[in-house]
Image 1 (cartoon, rainbow over the protein chains, first blue to last red):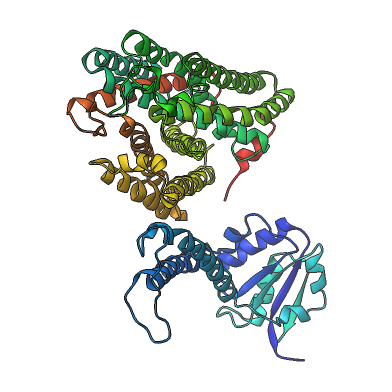
Image 2 (image 1 turned 60 degrees about the horizontal axis):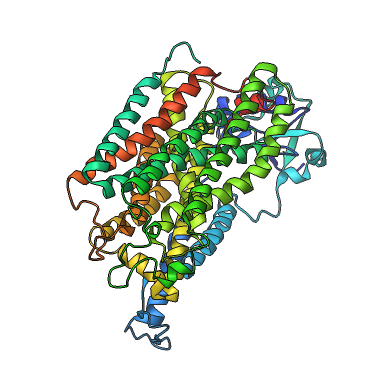
Length: 184
Length: 406
């Protein structure tokens, strides 16, 4: 048999898996997850998951977008800066100043949104460790049921608290339908 | 009504009467500025009530779950709309007893425009007489308040009757009223914005103005809603009913309308700035004179940027203390924004823009105008609060609302 990745337990109802998750959280496990066919309301606190950090990426992207827009328009239309191959070109449009935040704002605002969106998507990929093309759970015989009507909870053997015997006993106490092993 | 907290509406009525009394003294001491301050107070209080009316209608049209207990507070506030209509009567009296052009200059044909003849000989007025005629104007005021009072009455009747009998027909009736009401109240509130504020400077026109006054009303109402709910939670009646998820949702709406207000206000400014046509730009030029320049900067940074960055943050939106602070901040800025939109339209006989603190006594009339209308609004709220249940206990969605959580 291949190297063991962890232990997996199968549950029948959302309530069962929620209570199981609470116990795993309270037992102090770190490397574990829950697989469900649909989002379960209240699962995040039951698993002890904190608020997502994607927002931090978004605000950075937004601030960068606003700055980029303002600087770009100032540089091309209003500055005396001379950069090789990228000289600004001053144009008089409608008797307006060469640069003013007013007319730079719509474009900067669009860039704020665009960069926020990119940063959010990028941040989501980074935080979720995407793309993940393979996961040991996919090899488990019964995993297809997790996209139908069954719920799974697995604990990786890389978890500092993991001990094949003790964790098996612990999982049994959660009263799952069955317990299986995950292969690497 | 909760057993452990007994409100005292009378003290708010006294505040309202005191404010109105100050305004009435002002009508004799400094008629013009007192009348304008009275109008500002009236616009401010009415916009809170109109924003609440919109919140009720938006709740019903979406068949929302989470806002059932919030809606009950809004239903108390909209009870003030008929009183706001009554508060309009002194303005009617003033323009006829005192001076026709005291508030809305166009009402006085003989009023002289600085260096440009009189209002009656002004072609820009002559072309607008079909809309800016006095019978039509006062007719619109009556019509607007009649529409608002009707919808306020209908939603309150449905909701309070449901407390008694629990019948579903009240919910359906409210939903139908919301569908028609959203259109009618949007149109009448736009007309009110055009008439009451834009009409102060009849040369000027902006198609964005109706949207701006809608955004302004929503922001004022949401700030008051945050304060009301935070107060009722702190005092006990809503404790354990209104939770931080409800707070978060109301705060998120306040955040959304912060962005919406900024979008509308900037668009209005930007289009006029970009087109650069003198007949439009003068309105903003007036608002860059003297103290109005720093005030306009305070509005950009204090009414948009600061609340925007503040309410971006989840922990601040789910904390009663921090949202109470933000609600008070937003409400103060809302008053300032109303001042900014109304007062610079007032010119002295040399054509100079009126300055907010030109005389220390002005502040007294401002306080009188605002506390008068606000006192009546709060008196109306607490009187209605006393008579009904704290939440709509038989609303079909009440259980879903109570279970609403993060």
